[in-house]
Length: 151
Image (cartoon, rainbow, N blue to C red):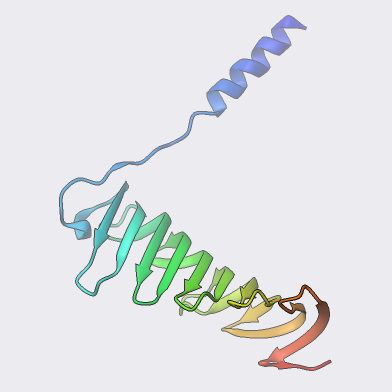
């Protein structure tokens, strides 16, 4: 029994080692790869996060702030694919995004007043079963078809 316990403890210790990216070096973010860093580009986008195998491409976990939007989540090939997008007016969307950057798949849109919509998006439009909740917490099950509630 002691041997089994020792094996389990050692296994947990070795499996608990986390892979940490090194800090990005140099000032030219377009050359960064397999590292963690921060930059502000020519257009004013501020990014702090991970870079993958391709130089200058956001890939992994990060935070991007551009114009009146903030995205916190997972990037793949320089695009946000899942996470939280917050607008300057306080509205936000949590979920997944397609290649065009539109809401895609299961997600939750929260308005600045606290009301929200939960459902499935296809190319930025709601379809199928979902729920709405007003700012007072009153929930309603609904069916969506594009931008319309059909029940």
